[in-house]
Amino acid sequence: MPRDIQGKFALKNDEHRFVRSLRLTDTTWRALGEEAESLSLTRADYLEQIFRNKPHSLPSNTRIKKEDLLSNTHGGADSQPSNTWQKEQIEQQLTQQHEENAFLLAQIQKFTQANALEQMRDQILTRLKLGKQAPGYKKAVLALNQFIQLLRDKFSVPTDTP
Image (cartoon, rainbow, N blue to C red; front, side, top):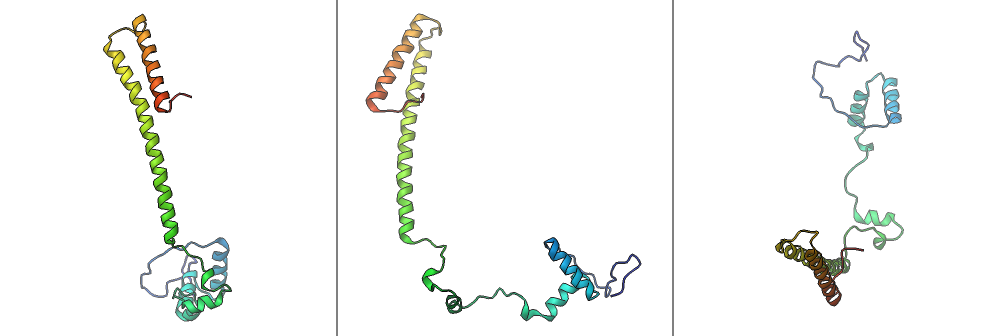
């Protein structure tokens, strides 16, 4: 193949060639270069020649008949891996998910009830219009906290503090 003044391979004709990129490992790139150079071709020309002259030897993406595939395996159709879910598996997953959701909903409701009691306590304390250092405020906080604790014990509402 003739080279131009800079030592690069000269174009075969004046036809514009679009450039594409490939991801190859270093060893594949070197092997491709050595093979192309031994034929006095560029890597691109060598790849084009391979695809033009040897299409039957290239890997194919055509589908293989199922019988051929099954005959090549030792286990038959039952040993074929499957990425589809069976109906029982789906139902089991759904029931498990529903149980988890119901449990989480109950926990959230208990948590919001506990927070609601503390929020109501704070609202009542702000309505008293007492300073936080006032003896009446401290007694009211103590009484309301005891009331909230009694409610939690009676209705088994979890506490936020450890």
